[in-house]
Length: 205
Image (cartoon, rainbow, N blue to C red):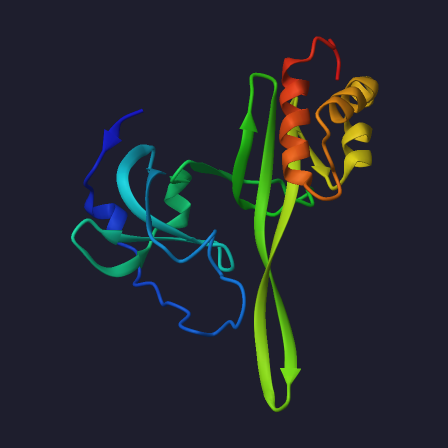
């Protein structure tokens, strides 16, 4: 892959409109509104040293020029992947038959046989307090395991075992030995068990 630090096409998107103080709690962004150095695969070229924000609510990737100034939207059709800090996102063009949403997915683990993905979303919660409407945003995460060309939605321990029945007993041992709690920390439990699946000697998961 070719690498590039400059490129006018990258900054040709529309000016990004910020939210201001619209939400009393939560943030529309991935983690926070702080712009962070990262990388973007744009039109097949890797752009390094880009300053980025991921607007999860609108599924927009936002940048600013190296000299600072206004924020711009990055053209989504041209983006196939990006990194913000040490977190990588990939764009999936999901079939209409799938219940998965098209767009960007956080890569939690990528091995030689299996991949664990997370769809970051925001849920709007509105509450009347007196005569005022309070708007808050809650983080929502949906997990998917990609294996052998298929995607499996994983919502709990049971759905993981159902997706990989041949590895059920082995995964139970891993969960017990590592004190994994699928109810209180699903993300960590899935990362650890999927890593084990990738390294598993079970010939057919």
